[in-house]
Length: 367
Image 1 (tube, rainbow, N blue to C red):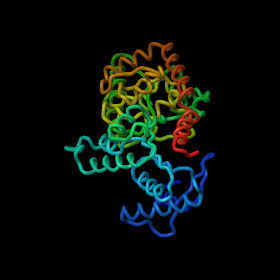
Image 2: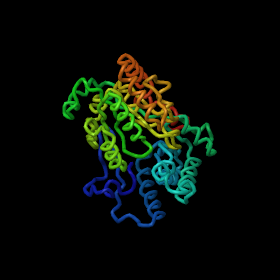
Image 3: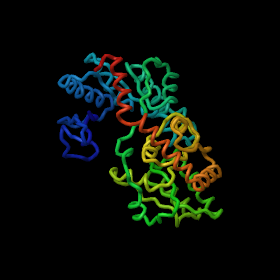
Image 4: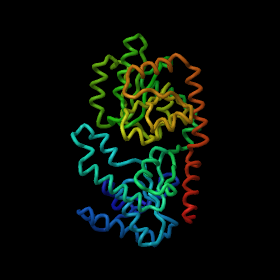
């Protein structure tokens, strides 16, 4: 069930009350009158609309994903209907905000940061079950006073199309003008500061100056794009770097396959120490060897999987050395790729992840 008014509120004016994406049914809460302008009135309207849907469909429980706006509505409807309430913490909203505004003086003490943290924590405490993506996130939630017995790790999972793909990336490489013998590194990401992409650009530039050029493929877009383009232009890698922008979702496996090494050069920050991203899981499913910053959210993935190397964050020379090692050792790249693929196949498929959710729901008596 999508939030009140969506997707009309984002411009899809002809949307109906029901949609299906693949095999997943989506129910839309589309009111006949304009949404209330006041935030509290909007939440009440959302809860009333959701309650009507819940009473007509009789689900076993209500499961809401961050942020707290979803959680508060689901909690209220669960209270009215006597259903169990699960809250899925995919990230910490206030820390994601801080990662983008942390250069502002006093940002962690602002009303926005503190109030968001307070409300998110309140929703966690109201939930009968809290699910989250990794061990570091679970510890953070427990540190906020939530009963450990109610906090379950349900990690990121991938579609089998990544695991089963035999795409070798040749079509994408040919489209981009990358020769088969050109060593190509890069990532697929939203270009936020905490992704640490400048570190990767500088590492590739250092190698080029040392006589080891390689192609750099940065797929995606975001607020840092213009500054990245300026850095590329000034660092001597403009002729070997590519920024194609966003690519169609159905083509994503081909873009992973076009890379010899998938890089996750995240900076060291509160959000990167806590939150485990999805893209490295998809890359490992595609047998891509990984170089990833040695921060908590990535350590949880690289260490158990054996899917690549951990590299000091915010350190272009360390990244240059890791890239040099990956370039020179094809056997290691193959071992990392195979190990990561096997780990994802065992532990991170949607089927495996859904089983964790199912078991948690059963403990609530919701089957």
